[in-house]
Image 1 (cartoon, one colour):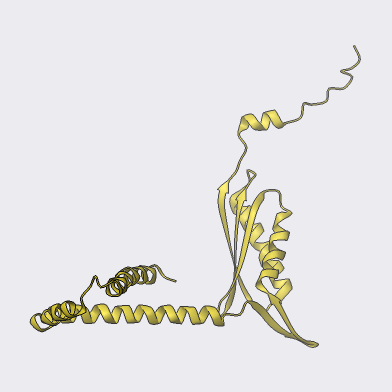
Image 2 (tube, helix red, strand yellow; image 1 turned 45 degrees about the vertical axis):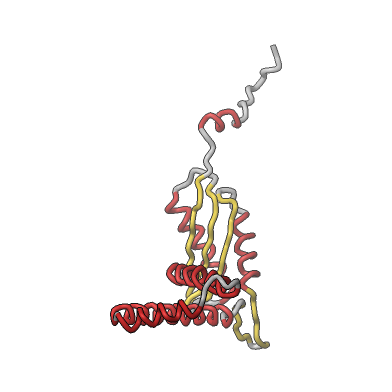
Length: 194
C-alpha cells in the first residue's frame, strides 16, 4: 500500500467516521447540512470543481488500493515448475529458511532475515543482517550475493532470473580494548620451570 493511499484512507476515515457518529447521536442535522451544501454548490462553480476533483481522487485511490489487494491475494506463495515426473512446488517460506540456514553458517553475519519476492520476470531475494567482523565490504557482499544466487540457481534451475539484495543493517564490531582483553595470553614455553 502506497504512502498516498494510506494518507487518503486515513483522511477519509477520520472525516466519515466522526460524521456517521455525529448523525447517529443527533449531533449533526442533515437538513442544515444539506441546505449549506446546496448553497455552496449553487453559488460557487469553483467549489463544485474542487469537490469533483476530490471525489475523483478518492475513487481512484480506492480503485488502486483494491487492485493492489487483488494482486496480493492472487500472488503465488510458492514457486512451481515441471519435472519429467510431475509438478514440483516449493513454498517461499521453505526457500527463505534454506537461505537463512546457509547464511547462518557464516560467523561474520548474524540476525539474518531473508525474504523471497516473486515478480513477473525475476525472483528477488532480500537479505538483511548484522555484520560482526571487520571485512572488505565489497568482496564480502559480492561473495554472499554470489552464494545466494548460486543456491537459488541450483534449486530452481537456470531458467529463472534472480536478483539478490543484501542489506547490512548494523556494523557490530568489537572495540579495540575488547579485542585485547579477549585475546588469549600467549603460551610461553617452559614458564612453569624455574
